[in-house]
Amino acid sequence: MAKSPCPVSLSQFLEKAEPLKVIINGQEMLAEVKSFSTGSFGWYINGKTTVTVDGKPVSVQIGMNMTVVGSKEAAR
Image (tube, rainbow, N blue to C red; front, side, top):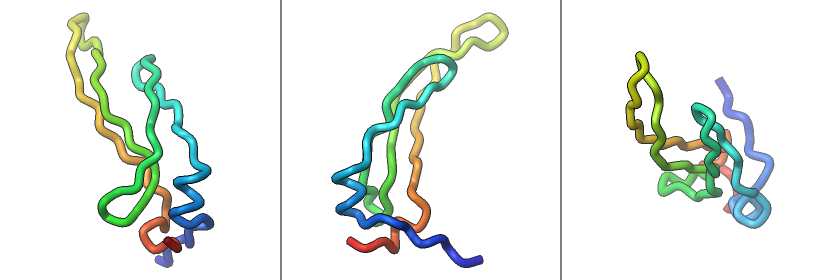
């Protein structure tokens, strides 16, 4: 299956992309614009929250990458 080409370059992305609001279990967090070590780019979020399981609070760690499709091959 052919990959979708990325419509923006790395420099365009870093200049114009904005942080994204992400809500996890009701907690609002901000995913920051990031250039990954793999050459891809997108957004990254890292944090902690509490989730209730069977009436008990459970601490969870959050780590999430949102990678722009085709960004690894995008113009630099």
